Length: 104
Image (tube, rainbow, N blue to C red; front, side, top):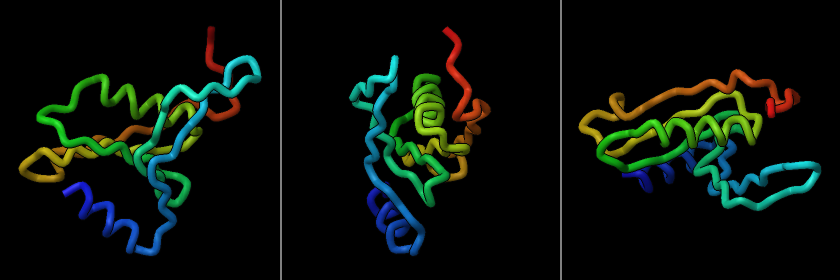
């Protein structure tokens, strides 16, 4: 199901980036921490793909982290392990502006 949806998205003509690595910037140094966004659509929407029995708070936290690190405005957490796809979609909005520093 996930692969079929991804193939359709790639064939849609939209700009799609898959498995996008994001470095963590700290003190002017770029750290490769293993952050990998599943899909970015049109350079604006982050898609985090799951196939789990239940979405957990850690899954939403992961999406929010990706939104903040990438500066993208909107993200969708998509869980494909549901009877109806509408039950497996969670939308998150990045409320932090990209130029704002993270408080210490």
